[in-house]
Length: 18
Image 1: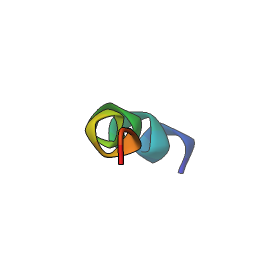
Image 2 (image 1 turned 120 degrees about the horizontal axis):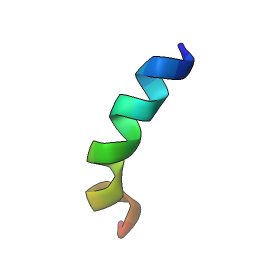
Image 3 (image 1 turned 90 degrees about the horizontal axis):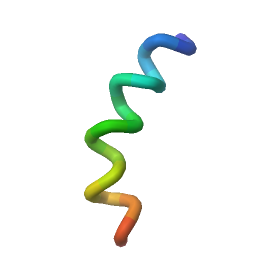
Image 4 (image 1 turned 30 degrees about the vertical axis):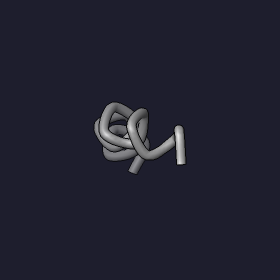
C-alpha cells in the first residue's frame, strides 16, 4: 500500500488545495 499512496499523493496535490 505504501507505493499506492505515493502515486495518489501526486494527484492529491490538486485536491489538497480543497
